[in-house]
Amino acid sequence: MATVAELYNERLNRIKKAVALEKPDRVPIVPLGDSFCARHLGIKLSEFCAHPELSNETMLKSFTSLGQVDGIQHIAFNPNLLSTIWLSKVKFPGKELEDDELWQVEEAELMKIEDYDVIIDKGFDYFLNDFYLNRLDNLGERLQPFYAAFPGAFKATADLGIVPFSPVIVTIPYEMLCGARSMVVFLKDLFRIPDKVQAAMDASMPWILENARQLCRTMKPIALWVGGWRAASEFLSPKLWQRFVFPYYQQLVEAVAAEGVIPVLHFDSNWTRDLSFLLQLPKAKCVFSPDGTTDIFKAKEILGDHMCIMGDVHASMLTLGTPEEVHAYCRRLIREIGPTGFILAQGCDTPPNAKPENVKAMIDAVKD
Image 1 (spheres, one colour):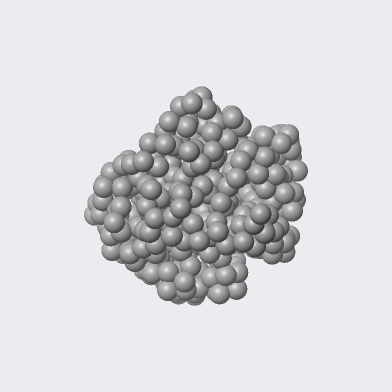
Image 2: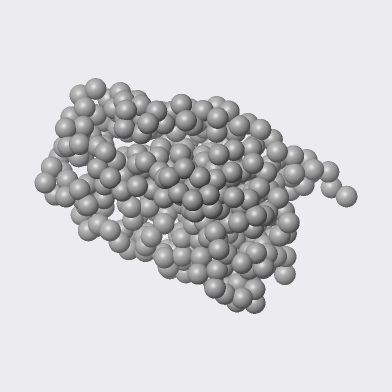
């Protein structure tokens, strides 16, 4: 019988082979779940969000009770993390919301138009520190308990032989500024003051790149998310997307890959139109992780010889489908997207009302 260390290394090797476009002994399964895990085990979301150690424990218990996973994408959760990528306030269960109500990102114009000049003139770090303190209610201090618990979550996950795959999130200026300005106002900025927006983005990148490098060096993750949500192709014309989105992703992905860490392109919404641009990213170093909206079969056609693909069991299927339907779709993914260069997972996140038997069917599908 394999030791925990041997099991961990077996699973890690399986994942790394998939990323390198090699054929592993079987397709790896690396799910993500936060609110689902809490609901599955009857943990109130207010408790789950308030205690990072509990969130880690809950994720591990939930997934290991449903089958044998090779890794999990996130190892603990706190809704404040969403504020770091969208610079928006978040309503918490047990505070602004009922105890078991899902957290909510508030869409509000917290950043003013003159803040672009602050970023350009004083630097993104100056702007961000002031923004965290004065407009996000001292976000840095509120995240300290989560960061303090993170090493323990890493160890607890690895001690079960499970790979903590991509527990860290970074993103590009577009996502952060869009959240801070609010989406409608920011999109207007792209037309009214495009040069100023680009100047602020360019001024932000040195800090974003150095922050990503330091995260890679201090935390030493196997992979991290390079997230994309509002920057998806379906929201912008090609001209705007090619100016304000892709060049910044390319810089960030290359910086992460240069540190020996796998960039996981966690791209929600529909990116089908611009999949060919991803061929400019480092070959056999990245993972493309769509949420079920992008055509994953088209992604295989375009990217299959260039980067690993992860996904994309749809939220609707996990919630409304049957175990038989989930199993059949997973087998199709393994057959048509894999078996090389593929990691099985849900699309984006496992929804809170997913049926446990459907999640189990997804996990078990890799064993057939």
